[in-house]
Length: 312
Image 1 (tube, rainbow, N blue to C red):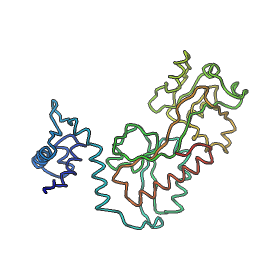
Image 2: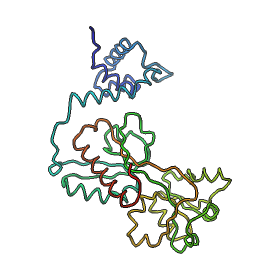
Image 3: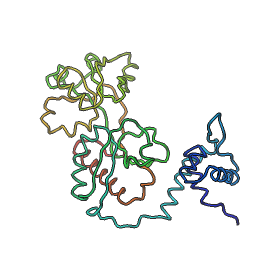
């Protein structure tokens, strides 16, 4: 029984990812002509063109699109079988720098506990937190980032995802604000006051505005700022209402700054958000990376339990 050359699977994975013969050749360190011959063999084996020309570029056929995710998973699963990481990890002797991409809210709430935990268990490990300007898997794919933490966006089908906890948005005003005199806030009261919105993109509207629009109401967004700490700072010094994740306030519950804030549940029901950690499949079986993911999960679980949020 003739079996297909399994090396073709790796070439197929790269071709589907690059959607370019030249690009696949560069990644596999082959000549363009050799990669073209490999594509011809793949077409013969699968009975499908796989890549077809559309103007000046190549595009995937419907069949190629349908097997793209399955091919990537199969390649990494095969590597995990043939090249298992059998080392017994000793965190005390581990020397490594991990780059974590997360927004300022996660860093403010969880970074201190995570850094302290890692330092106690693995003193030679360094954590490097970098900003999260966009929801893209490119940094995970090319190795610039080891772990991405946040709400899952358009990350690509091959990216591994593990939910950490569920979060929700709440409203925040300064203590002494007229809204703080009651037990809750009505929709009419909510739109009566100006708002400060945290948005990296500068867009003032969000899910809350869509719900209000459905009710025939509109809130006035007086300004946008790039981060949640900035939004809270403005709320403390004004009559504007800030909208922040509930988890962001767990770190402030015992701070002096929290005494200047009054937190309330939103008068409109918004969908909760799931905070997850995401990584590239190449890191799936790496012992050190598995250890890091476990530390992140444990720290989030402990903070979430103290803050009264729901575990993922």
